[in-house]
Each structure stands twice: as structure tokens, then as C-alpha cells.
Image (cartoon, rainbow, N blue to C red; front, side):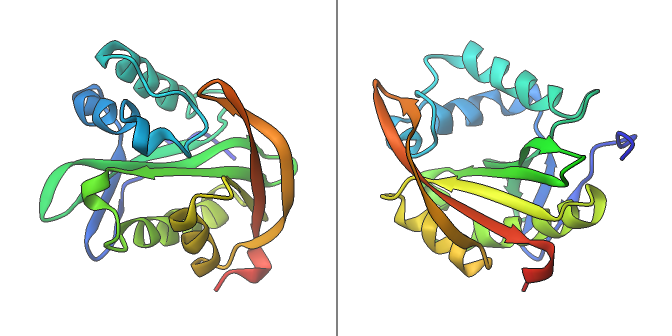
Length: 184
């Protein structure tokens, strides 16, 4: 796959999925600096705004050669401003697979926004990245994320013991996947 010329903007009924920019740093920090939100994310909370700016640069670098993924800002069409992010990382173009990652600000949780965003992002990935398999690693206690994955058709494949390390301890993760042939 060739690198896209411009960032792929996706619109859903309620959401605009767009490129994450430096102007999103405060909202990224509000989410990624919140220990409660980050307890399941797989990384320690960000310490400051500079770390949020660095994370935005890291997300942007996934779209450069070699392309390893794409991460979208999620915002409400009715109220601009980043409320979360979602996207692909660790893309293996030869194997036609990647990992899915996502997070949402606490005030936006429970409204179906992430399911809506991920449905569109998954469709984009299967079509534009020629994916056959999308994987998700989810903490066994992250009930909301487990529910989203199952709603989207992901199949649980097993437990990866102590595969993650954040906040000073090892964590088990559940391995999920969605195949092109299984898409709802």
C-alpha cells in the first residue's frame, strides 16, 4: 500500500474522525494524564503537556515511511474538540494484520461513540490497508472495552499472561481478533 497523500477523514452520523494535531495537546493530556482512564491503556499516565505533544508526534510518525498505522482524533460533529482517539498500530502489511487501540474521555463514555468510531475505522482498515486480521489486547478487568470488542464481532483467542507492564506491575491481557471474513 502506498502512503496516503492526505490524512483520511471519516465522518459518521455523530462523529468526525480526523488527524490529531498539536492543538489537541490539552485534550490528549486530559485523557492520557488521567490515572483512572489510563489504568487499562497499557502505559503510565502522561506527566505533563510536553509528553502529550510528544505522543501526538508519535501518532503522526506511524503514517510515515514505513507506515505502521493510523490514529484518528474523535470529535463530536455537533461540538468540535477531541474526546478520544482510535486507530491502528503495529501494521504488518505482508501478513495483512495490525493492532487496534482506542480511548475515550470519561465524559464521553457510555454514549456509543467508540463503537460508532471503530465500526468506521475497521471498515477503512479492511478496505484501505487490505487487512485480513485486526487484533486487540484488552485487560481482563476492562469490562467496557470487552463489551465493545464483542459487539464489533471480535473473537477472544486467549489470555496472554503478564504480557504488559505499566504502573509498576505486570498485567495479563486478553487477545481478540476480527477477521475480514467475520465482519458483521
